[in-house]
Image (cartoon, rainbow, N blue to C red; front, side):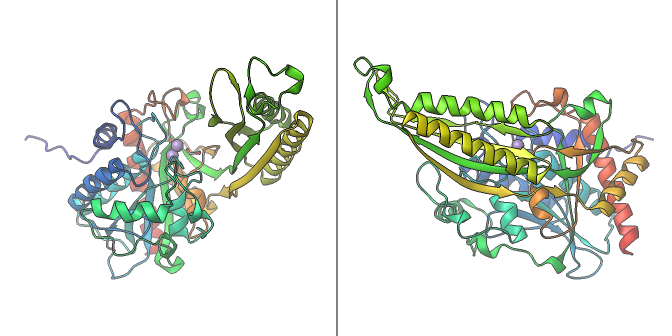
Length: 424
Ligand code: GLV
Ligand code: MN
Ligand code: MN
């Protein structure tokens, strides 16, 4: 007898992520960059709509351009287990940071659909459009819209062309095969009674699972993070005629501040991390002393106090440097995301699912931010990490293996079974 192989598999999940890693699903010719509300984001949604439909889901776009595929439960309007992650990326990204969790969600639903199984809850697969914050200076606009924690102040941000999220949504809706009758992200919040739980599977983006020879791990919680925008203002002057004593050099001041950030983060120790990942200066000429430098600051720790103490120390030191150098310093806090523990009961269920799928129980903390940290304001959350090669992420060298992706799928299906038993 010829065995008919199911098309549902970890291999297909990886294939689909790879397929979404190139044009037209990327906004750059070589490599992957998919920011919120770009043509690549639109193409990705339109393709995912067909994958979700094949898997037995109805699809819709919410007012923040989150794609939601719904697989009904065994009764109408049953609350949903949301399985989600993001489909936006950083510049020159890996292919699995985000999309892996969405593709795995589609796979889970297709497995249920193939068996004709309906559960005491619905399943919704959600592809969040902005987690990285690659387009606007804040991140997680989409999950915050769904969780109801987005504010009008958040929506006042502008992209590099000076457009707000609402303005860009106006253009984006025209590219969609799906109607978007409402494009006000403030109206995308879900009712807690309609959501049973949130499950996100994501590559670990760190080296722990690989070091321990494990395919998967459960996440106990996600570190708190802050984002700041810093502007240092000095005076443009002639590079040849202005003596070193008379300069108010914004570039040299910013450089000293960045070194101070690194020193303070090292001194604070523990899991504290501080990063300057973006910098711009003007006027940007070889023979002109910099007038203005603007840079980002990202500060994180599992402990909110630890993070806040570090941020305060950094701010104090930067102000001292500015005063000593005769510079003006503007420091704006753009984002404050609290640390977020995953739900204990769901995490325990996830570890039981890991055991049932043949993997040891293992729980770890996430230093990276995830939509799950925002969704915890709406419902209990659980997160599954999948080993990635060398712990490398935010880099085109990011890799996840097919057997590990299959392991994640097996665990997720076991988790759904356990949740079904709990809810029956
Ligand atoms: C997202 O990858 C983040 O941790 O900033
Ligand atoms: Mn990322
Ligand atoms: Mn991610």
